[in-house]
Length: 559
Image 1 (cartoon, rainbow, N blue to C red):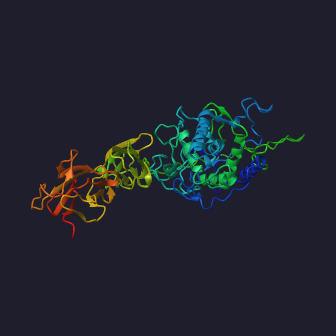
Image 2 (image 1 turned 180 degrees about the vertical axis):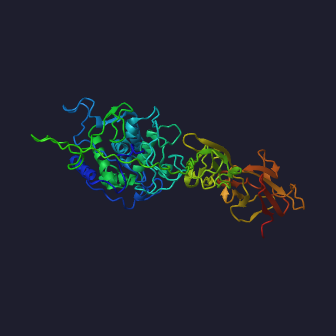
């Protein structure tokens, strides 16, 4: 770790020499000499909003302070003083460069107003990890070995206690910045992305990390073509004036020209070892070190060295007994993901599911695994969504290892679908639940008006019967309704006299099967009266048991 961060700054501990060099470089590149304060109405912390300075992506962890050469790199072949490959410092490893440009393209399609330049990602990647340690990544863009910052234990750095159970940084006590863009685990849990389309969000993968950094920088309403917004974005990544100046200097340097170099051959920051260049030797300040002996004046000889006086031998001593140290307990790792008692997932269209998806994470030793991010996703041909209209949400397990998904609300599409729960990074643990949405079934039938329905003997009823089938006040279309003229006996049956309908052949019928239309509305066919005066009953019923009785009067008109 000492080699990795030998040339990194501690928060608030930047040397005057480095700051002066940064100012000089910025003056040469015409970059701003002082940052804009990261305040204002867009300074919010929720996902999708602008992160505040207190929630820096890196936790204000250390960073490399090397500055670019004061000479402009120039584009390959653009200067007679440069080889056609460009300067070594302007070279960016192929996979790393591809990841930055891919992130810029994706952000241009999903958040064009941000105007993210890939050179800004390159500048941050240079300062944070030396372009993934000179591009030491595999074919998929994952670093060959983890890039971890020091424990953020408050000893010279910020104090951030563990938030991921060591899942990302292998430290179950304190958080560490992780990967080529140096995200702390709690920030990655919110902003992590799948930049290479492999179905995983891995902070050690340059494609995932570059896209996540781009979205983090673009959060809120930032326009990175504006100097003030760019400064705010960089300060939200690591809230340090010196950090901003260093990133700004590399940003300006890369904008003036870069070129691609093979993976693993990028120039490493001084003090990290390896790479294609070695750090310059540190000069010895005047007045320090051991002076070289000067020439002996003529006629003099140097004073002879007096013989050493032998010292009496020391009496033998008993070496102190060091009590054996207890080996440190290895951090817990995620072992399994299990159902935590999720019941049957079913709901009526348009309603909330009474049951919520619950999972429990356990470590490899079988104990509850806390602080593990679990991603819940709705899959299948359905418009069912979690609260807020989201199809994917991430919840962190509690101290008992349990994570509960937000409530689901059914849409209008009926049928089955799936809900998946996924946890883990190196090895994914997945649970799949089956859920279903059933159609609304009418629970009420009601008339849409209250007109008195009368007819003269041998005549017809002037006003039609209009009804509406509904479920909890919402009209239900395509509801089957049976209309029957019934007797008033204790056990009603179809009446053989009084009002009647006509079938297609014009014959009298006293029972009809009908279906509601849009919004559950139904207008019955015309009703006729025979010669028998009296008060009669029309009964309407649905298959679900909703019932409505309508009174029909057959009487001679008043004289």
